[in-house]
Amino acid sequence: MPVTAFIYGLALDHITDADIDWTVDTIKVSLHTSTYVPNQDTHDFFNDATNEVIGTGYTADGQALASPTRVYTGGTNTLSLDAADSAWTTASFTARIAVVYKDRGGATSADELLSYIDFGGDETVSSGTFTIQYHADGVIKIVAA
Image 1: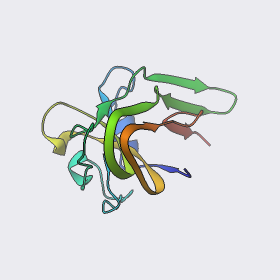
Image 2: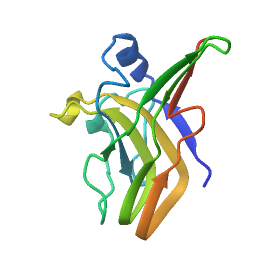
Image 3: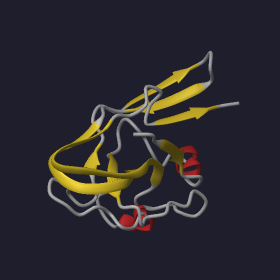
Image 4: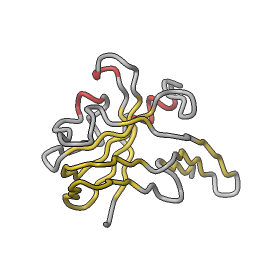
């Protein structure tokens, strides 16, 4: 499936303000239908990420990223924020967008959005495993130019 990943513009504020520690905080990925239209310029908290998937094998608010790592490469001035691929087993649902965010464990209006992945079309699973295989460069890649 062709995918496109984006960082929410306001996530840079959260990252530079040290609101987010990729390897310590609970970072989650949630799935959303095609009726959620991400806005990189104005969406900043999880309550902006509407139309979350409902279906068998999926729990509201998504799942925590496993094995988060942070690697800076000096030669390319690249910061890679990575994690293990995410999977929902014994699942039946349709998703279009995956949203990565910091879960503070309370009101979704305080959970900072970080990035989203557009699958390029609806992806449906029926009594199977839905897997997001993150790019080799990471879930989020930031390049200092």
